[in-house]
Length: 288
Image (tube, rainbow, N blue to C red; front, top):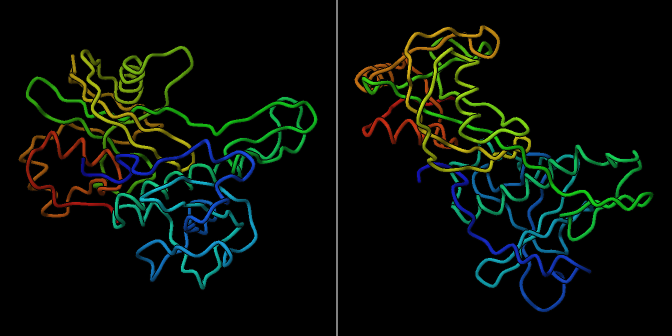
């Protein structure tokens, strides 16, 4: 698949999380410095890996093992400028798959720590455990685990094999993407696809087919990609989440992206892969 974070490439080695077991032994340990979704880099391109004894103070996160090397991250409030921080959202498409696998793991955990410092049950400040993968409340003993919010992202096509794309109100003219939305409690993934499309653009969807998934830790989503078949074609946008939506033929996508009249998502997003899979040819446009 041609998008960032498409597959896990490291062994998370959860058995080494307890009692700082990951630090023990003579295996090499490489450390990533991370602040929110920003990571330390070399020249803004590749991830900067440093030795354990060179790492700044912060919350430790053990990531796992790759090729007999142990990888960890240290979470700081802000990555120092001299370490050339770059958002993983920007860095993702340009780094190797094994580095992207480690980075998306680290960013997901780090973002969770930032927003879940207190116990949801009693309000006490929680303490990190198991190499950053659990937070435990010292007052009531509740264990809190990293949160992942499932979201559906779908390319809907009609009987003429046109693709349905929408534009959010905050996007500039010409910027379009696939529709997406969060899964609600008590809802299947298929039903979430149908509900979101109906709510946003008034299109009824029949058959829904799973296509692939992508971790998206900005801050805590798992994007679940689908193709769907439209049972109606008259668009009624909600004017809340969607400002404009329309059907596109392959020829229109080819011509409009080449002319920069249609701006589509870059390869960091599974949305681009869904579009490319349907289109089957060259899509020139991308977001800046």
